[in-house]
Amino acid sequence: MKKLLLSALVLTALMSCNKDDDNGNNQDINYSKLPQEFPFSKLATVNGVDVINGGFGSGAAAHPTRKGEFYVITDRGANTDYLNGKKFLAPNFTPTIMHFKINADGNIEVIKYIKLKNPSGQPITGLPNPAGMGSTGEVAYDAAGNTLGTDNYGLDSESIVAAADGTFWVSDEYGPHIVHYSAEGVEMERISPIGVNTGTRKLPAVLAKRRANRGMEGLCITPDGKTLVGTMQSMMYVPSKTLAKNKTLTRIVTFDIATGKTKQFLYKQDGGASDSVCDITALSNNEFLVIERDGNFGSQGGIKKVYRINLSEATDVNGSDIAAVDGMKVNNKALEECSWDEITNAGIKAVSKTLAVDLVAKLGYEHDKFEGIVYLGNNKLAVFNDDDFGVVDDGNGNPKAKILPKTGKVDKGTMYVVDIQ
Image (cartoon, helix red, strand yellow):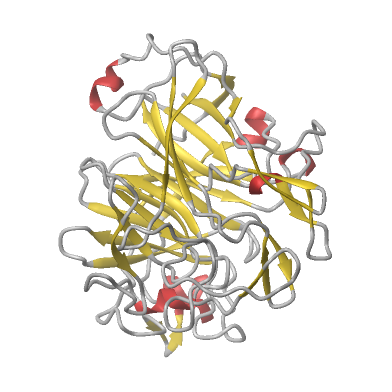
């Protein structure tokens, strides 16, 4: 497998992922102004700190047919750590998809915002799910510390797929759920490992043992349009927090859209349990690019890498029963209890991976939450970050401005494009 080498240059030309673009039909689009921040307004002011109407970049997808158009999605909204949960700084915030394009003069132009809605067409929130509906055990509070409720249809959305029929698939960190939305953002089906479904299909039960804020961070669709491929953010607590020892083991799950059949594959992270496998984008039906990152800013030694992976020779570890809450076992131990040597000796192969790019080394990438990628065809990659709505925790459960240490500016969602040579 050839390694992908990325140039540090921001491209002046870009293409979407349809086949015609691989013939080089991208010279009519002006991308010379990239990198470029998304346009933002103010969502709220809390304790004198502005919360921007941002967050676009937790996940990203190209428009399936229109060159130069994209979708980016927010997560559950601005929040800070507080007691046994989170303060939601704008509790009524609705996770939102932004549809945008790069227009003729090279600027980002928002086409529309699509708010996610429940099956009745009412906007959802990012508040946690109740017990039995995908709860992580987190308690939601408002900015003043008052307890908030839950939302049966709430979503901590992290990745997005734009399907050819105009609908969207969104993965999240609560259930974890994969939710199918109409073109208008209305929920059509919710697929989870615990049977919280508006349809009848399920994810493998073992995925319910994800850690809070460590659910299904990435999601993409294969080029043939048949299979969703999702990445769990990092190690899960299988069979329990105490017994899960392999801190570099995480999982990739595939979901056949037509049949609902699932498969699971093991992925070996470079870093430990605190690092993240984020978005995933398809190169072919078996090859993908995935993000690995830590939580530091790029200018302060942060790790922001993209790996090329291949599922074709990896072992499906679904086992014979996707309802098994601890999944496949080796020597009567859950996979997360096993060392990589034990796993290998049992004949289980993880997905192959090779480094595609180190964004810090190649671009001087300064953001901390590198969370969105889109393969554009013709060896080009679009890169997005989650700006956390311009705020971070001050250590006492209150917000402060999220400042990029290299520039001294408030972090904002930014689109970059790099050339894979």
